[in-house]
Image (cartoon, rainbow, N blue to C red):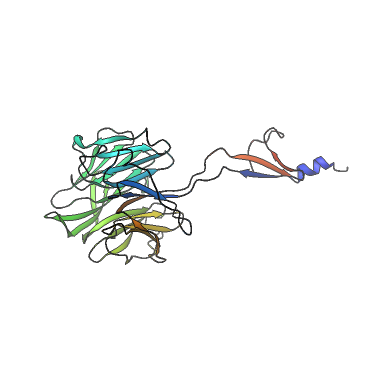
Amino acid sequence: MPTSRAAAAVAAATLVAVAAVATADKLYFASHEGYDVGYFDPSGDPPTAVAYLDLLKLKKADLPTGVAVDAAAGKVFWGNDDPNAASSGISSGDLGNLASSIKTIVDWSSGAVKDPEGMDLDKVNKIVYYADQGKRAIYSVPYAGGTPTVVHQFGGSSAPFDVAVDHDMGGGTLGVFAAVPGVTDGHFSSNGQIVLIVGGRLTPLVSSMAYPYAVCLHRAKKLLFYVSGEKGAGAFCFHYGARGTPGCPKSSWSVPRYVMDCEVDEAAGHIYYTMPANSTAGSIFRTALDGTDHVELQSTLNKPFRLSLAKATVTGATRCFRRTQRGAEDCRGSGGVTACG
């Protein structure tokens, strides 16, 4: 039997998914003496210009230190180590409505915050983790706020400077990694450590390390990167995955002195670093996971301290179209087609 044009059109049909436009990557940084949190898209060539959240204008920040962003939840968190500022402690806000949503989730008067430094998020369980150098402890607190929980209290001269969280190291086990410099007479010394805390138990991974400033994770590959920021400045890699799984692409490499923080872009295979400097010439640069391909992304920032990467997300509903000889037709109502194949 001859095939009608309509039947031929259906036979030649192809189902195509058309999704909403994705947002851009945003790398957030705490500008300690710029009194704000800035951000830019680091994926472009060149990267986009820096924009700011205008926290000082909103009278909600003075000396921000750590910053952490959960783009899917639309939340930004930052720490502030100035007791005279309106947001002293740990604060949060909604990215889409910052001016009217900022609140302090851990107040200075609680006794659970004094000099907050690095921060990280358990985005599955909606928990903020922060390293407090002044209290010599690592704390956790729900996104919504409440009474902070002491994850680990350090003793002696140990003062945590940064923290990174893997909510599932394997078998559902949550691990908290920390960079813990030694402090003597108010100054960092050479007896620092990189540690792992699981279920309240601390295990030293690296000991007798000079100036461990930062830790960051490639969670998919179970790689811990950490940075020594002053004497013998360098970046290092530690594989914490199961035996037999691929390890570090390189164990160590040189970085400029005074690197303060690092952040991993797992999808792009990059590590971002901050170098605050002592003026408005602070910079952010990136390397590959093995330390090669060094690229400076920003060079005129005011004391960029900590980093947080928010990867691009897709917003809006996905629609399905049937491409036929007559053109694109919406699948809805076309013979019961409800999903793209």
